[in-house]
Length: 505
Image 1 (cartoon, rainbow, N blue to C red):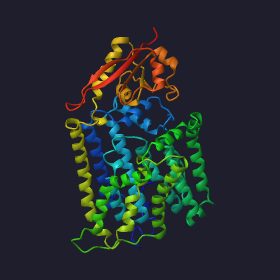
Image 2 (cartoon, rainbow, N blue to C red):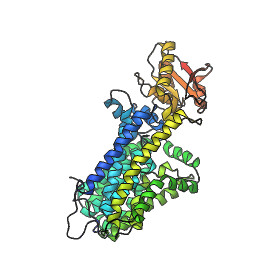
Image 3 (cartoon, helix red, strand yellow):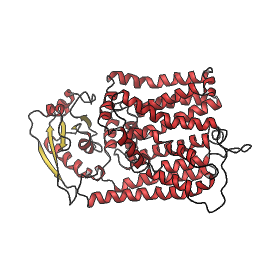
Image 4 (cartoon, helix red, strand yellow):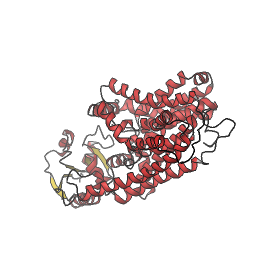
């Protein structure tokens, strides 16, 4: 089954009456696909050429990937699975393939968002919404840092799309996919539950959807969801819901809600430029009115846009924390299209599309150029804290690996400490060491104290991340030694402290 013309236009106003909707790879669909491929190419090649170190979340998830976990003490492990597959496909090291994995998820998110919006309110709004979304932080300059927020976005968008198609078409295939994708999203991030609750509420609220509940489809979806989600439930019970506790702790350290909302406004400001241009830039030619949108489809778009944001804020408050800006990244997917649908009159939407394309493509080129300039300035001129992607990963990994080899002569099988320094050492090490987070077996059940005694461990840290009590206990009375690394001519040397726990003879 192809997501082509039979999928698009299910909102009755998506195409003019009496006309067949164009396939997704016809007309504006080709422009959208080329644009998404351009975005993917930029954010794969640029970091591959410019970054000296992998981003923190890539390093941490990549270290977990070799353990093939269902989940860690923080998150479920779907991003780790993809990074491990990328490492294996690239010959045993993780480099540019990590950026390609993230670009694939970003591209899928943009494409699915385009399909959903086009299905509900038409191609013009869908194209402009996709262009504006591609300028938002997590879809542009932060996209190379593949993490759980980025990983969950395609699943987040696919759930309402599949729910709409299942209700409109009534075929068991769409219901089965809804159950499968709904469950798989939980392996990307547990906050995926927010969109599941919203879609469940919509199924009960919408008259046509409610009528479908008496058919086999929804129950098949529920059965598939339960079966696929069971391992995630078992993992949560086994870890005593530690990921939820972790989220609460992170939420308590987040900015206040007004600060988060203000920062979000700044983050989406490039998108605002495009919307304003589409709305107010005078047309050079006579405009053509877009087809009217169906009221039920427009209401569905509004629900899927606004309800997750409100529910996310309410749930964070109920759990005694605040919502973080990065947690809101999937909630932004439909915001540009929703604003365009409500702000840009349909009488000028066709003309606005042509103007929006020019502005949008200009922003898509300008943002990576500006970001590349910021990376270069940080590396060579700035005196403040160095961006992690500018850290000398190869030098740090080589020197600490040499220390281990000289002192033990054995394979390096365990690294312990903060995931940043130890991840830089272990992520591409030929011995494929496991990471023992903060020296705590509870956080890293794949590394027991008996294994450390048998295989030894390399421990390292720097002043920004001093040893936690569990790591101090692992170090014991051993004396730390130091290595120094240059972070640039305008910065002080970086001092790394390390301890070698030799393997048992």
